[in-house]
Figure 1 (cartoon, rainbow, N blue to C red):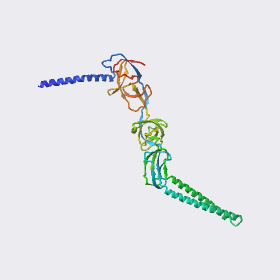
Figure 2 (cartoon, rainbow, N blue to C red):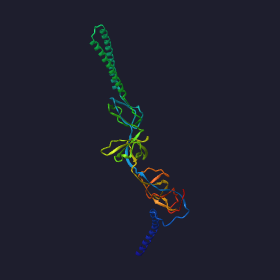
Figure 3 (cartoon, rainbow, N blue to C red):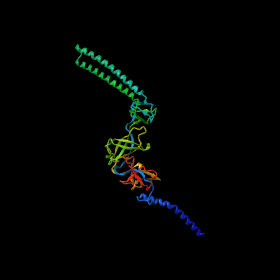
Figure 4 (cartoon, one colour):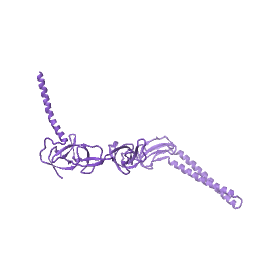
Length: 376
């Protein structure tokens, strides 16, 4: 019985070994190919016509990531300038407004009373002016006949001038009161969007109390915080790629509008303001990521058309003296900008060296060791 069990176990191990041998052979071939050694066999058949591209190494700036927040180029908090009850709010948060459009109305009755008082003061001042002018004319006639002294004439002229000044002062008070009445209607200072509503109908509006917040919906900026040793990487007018993760990693070309010269003593950083292109989906307060040009470093690029992705592996075929040789590639994700050349390119971290001849657009039938014929 024991001998039979040993024999069965031996047969089981032999079967497992038979299953593993093909896999081990394939793995050995793969490792030999990846290390640049010749495989133990060569593919046969007619040479495959291919185009090749010589790999070069060039110095390119390594991108530096900086983060910031989107900010409206214009924002305003609308406050009351008169006292009164809020009668009407014509716009809500999120609504678009145009410059000069009335968006909130305050009860103007108190201001109307002030206008009436100022107009009454004007009437009194004008009446006093008429009396002063009449009195001045009387004293001028008396002075001509010698019945009034020079002092009395001068006093009459002073009263007339004082009354005229009182009229102008009263008229100014009327203009001020009427302008205050216009403040009962709160208008948008520029084209934008209501982002916050800070009052309700029936609330008491007092001078200085915030009522609404408005932001420019069309023009947005990104405020970046940049370390003091990196502020020299940028200058005004330079374009910088910016992504907004909240909008699906939407990419923009932002222009440096201003580098604030004051440094934050706490963080040792400068604030850099970037102008974003117009986009109705942009909102203030969104997280933004900018890619800044850094120091130069050697970069090896491969045309996208030469990259092969098979079985979860990424690689490329190179010309190995008339034979196709497969190289495993590790692509870089440092965010380097695409370079101009044969076509869109990718940065290769390892697997290629300058001077390698990459096969462009390799056919799906091309395999390790296949004979190739290079054509222009």
